[in-house]
Amino acid sequence: MRQKLYLLFLFALISLCGAAQAHTDSSKIQAGIFDRIIWLGTDARQHLFLYMDGPRVLFRLNKNWKLGPAFFPTLMYNHRKGDWNTGLGAGVRVDYKRYSMGIPMYKIEGDWRPAVGFGFKF
Image 1 (spheres, rainbow, N blue to C red):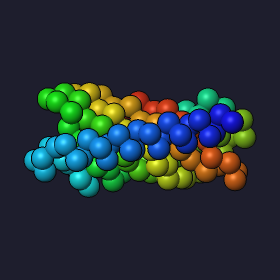
Image 2 (cartoon, rainbow, N blue to C red; image 1 turned 45 degrees about the vertical axis):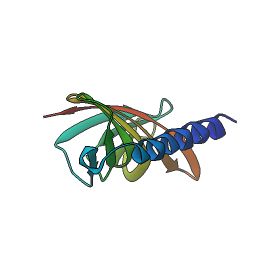
Image 3 (tube, rainbow, N blue to C red; image 1 turned 120 degrees about the vertical axis):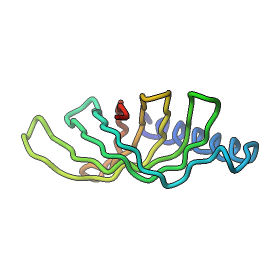
Protein backbone atom coordinates (compact mmCIF):
# COMPACT_ATOMS: atom_id res chain seq x y z
CA MET A 1 0.00 0.00 0.00
CA ARG A 2 2.83 2.39 0.88
CA GLN A 3 4.52 1.78 -2.49
CA LYS A 4 1.31 2.63 -4.35
CA LEU A 5 1.08 5.89 -2.44
CA TYR A 6 4.70 6.77 -3.32
CA LEU A 7 4.06 5.97 -6.98
CA LEU A 8 0.87 8.04 -6.93
CA PHE A 9 2.79 10.95 -5.37
CA LEU A 10 5.54 10.61 -7.98
CA PHE A 11 3.00 10.51 -10.82
CA ALA A 12 1.22 13.59 -9.45
CA LEU A 13 4.45 15.60 -9.27
CA ILE A 14 5.45 14.62 -12.80
CA SER A 15 1.96 15.53 -14.02
CA LEU A 16 2.27 18.92 -12.34
CA CYS A 17 5.56 19.43 -14.14
CA GLY A 18 3.80 18.73 -17.43
CA ALA A 19 1.10 21.25 -16.54
CA ALA A 20 3.75 23.80 -15.60
CA GLN A 21 5.39 23.29 -19.00
CA ALA A 22 2.17 24.28 -20.74
CA HIS A 23 2.25 27.66 -18.96
CA THR A 24 5.92 28.55 -19.35
CA ASP A 25 7.85 29.92 -22.26
CA SER A 26 10.82 28.01 -23.66
CA SER A 27 13.37 30.38 -22.11
CA LYS A 28 12.49 29.03 -18.65
CA ILE A 29 13.13 25.33 -19.42
CA GLN A 30 16.53 23.73 -18.82
CA ALA A 31 16.81 20.33 -20.45
CA GLY A 32 19.67 17.85 -20.36
CA ILE A 33 22.17 20.08 -18.58
CA PHE A 34 24.56 18.48 -16.10
CA ASP A 35 25.51 20.32 -12.91
CA ARG A 36 28.44 19.77 -10.60
CA ILE A 37 26.51 18.41 -7.69
CA ILE A 38 27.03 15.86 -4.91
CA TRP A 39 24.04 14.04 -3.45
CA LEU A 40 23.72 11.91 -0.33
CA GLY A 41 20.58 9.95 0.45
CA THR A 42 18.96 6.92 2.01
CA ASP A 43 15.96 4.64 1.58
CA ALA A 44 15.54 4.47 5.39
CA ARG A 45 15.89 0.67 5.36
CA GLN A 46 19.36 -0.55 4.59
CA HIS A 47 20.93 1.50 1.79
CA LEU A 48 22.96 4.68 1.70
CA PHE A 49 23.21 6.44 -1.68
CA LEU A 50 25.82 8.62 -3.34
CA TYR A 51 24.19 10.29 -6.34
CA MET A 52 25.79 11.91 -9.35
CA ASP A 53 24.00 14.45 -11.51
CA GLY A 54 21.97 12.80 -14.25
CA PRO A 55 19.74 13.93 -17.09
CA ARG A 56 16.78 16.03 -16.04
CA VAL A 57 14.27 18.61 -17.22
CA LEU A 58 13.85 21.43 -14.75
CA PHE A 59 11.16 24.08 -14.94
CA ARG A 60 12.03 27.41 -13.38
CA LEU A 61 9.22 28.49 -11.07
CA ASN A 62 10.85 31.80 -10.13
CA LYS A 63 14.33 33.20 -9.58
CA ASN A 64 15.33 30.62 -6.96
CA TRP A 65 13.07 27.55 -7.37
CA LYS A 66 13.27 24.81 -10.04
CA LEU A 67 11.23 21.59 -10.23
CA GLY A 68 11.16 18.62 -12.57
CA PRO A 69 11.69 14.93 -13.31
CA ALA A 70 15.23 13.55 -13.17
CA PHE A 71 17.37 10.41 -13.33
CA PHE A 72 19.80 9.65 -10.52
CA PRO A 73 22.88 7.48 -11.37
CA THR A 74 23.82 6.06 -7.99
CA LEU A 75 26.36 4.13 -5.96
CA MET A 76 24.44 2.18 -3.30
CA TYR A 77 25.97 0.91 -0.08
CA ASN A 78 24.09 -1.77 1.83
CA HIS A 79 25.26 -1.17 5.38
CA ARG A 80 23.74 -4.43 6.68
CA LYS A 81 25.60 -6.64 4.20
CA GLY A 82 28.58 -4.34 3.68
CA ASP A 83 28.52 -4.43 -0.13
CA TRP A 84 28.40 -1.80 -2.91
CA ASN A 85 26.13 -1.78 -5.95
CA THR A 86 25.09 0.60 -8.71
CA GLY A 87 21.64 1.69 -9.79
CA LEU A 88 19.63 4.23 -11.72
CA GLY A 89 16.80 5.98 -9.94
CA ALA A 90 14.00 7.97 -11.52
CA GLY A 91 12.08 10.60 -9.64
CA VAL A 92 11.48 14.23 -8.88
CA ARG A 93 14.07 16.90 -8.19
CA VAL A 94 13.52 20.26 -6.48
CA ASP A 95 16.25 22.93 -6.54
CA TYR A 96 16.49 26.03 -4.37
CA LYS A 97 19.47 28.23 -5.21
CA ARG A 98 22.50 25.92 -4.65
CA TYR A 99 20.64 23.22 -2.72
CA SER A 100 18.69 20.30 -4.14
CA MET A 101 16.35 17.61 -2.90
CA GLY A 102 15.56 14.48 -4.86
CA ILE A 103 12.92 11.79 -4.37
CA PRO A 104 13.94 8.88 -6.64
CA MET A 105 12.56 5.33 -6.85
CA TYR A 106 14.89 2.32 -7.18
CA LYS A 107 14.24 -1.31 -8.03
CA ILE A 108 16.19 -3.20 -5.35
CA GLU A 109 15.88 -6.97 -5.01
CA GLY A 110 12.73 -6.99 -7.19
CA ASP A 111 11.02 -4.33 -5.08
CA TRP A 112 10.50 -0.62 -5.90
CA ARG A 113 11.75 1.50 -3.01
CA PRO A 114 11.56 5.26 -2.57
CA ALA A 115 14.54 7.23 -1.34
CA VAL A 116 15.29 10.80 -0.32
CA GLY A 117 18.49 12.62 -1.09
CA PHE A 118 19.93 16.08 -0.57
CA GLY A 119 22.54 17.74 -2.72
CA PHE A 120 24.79 20.79 -2.91
CA LYS A 121 26.01 22.45 -6.13
CA PHE A 122 29.60 23.55 -6.17
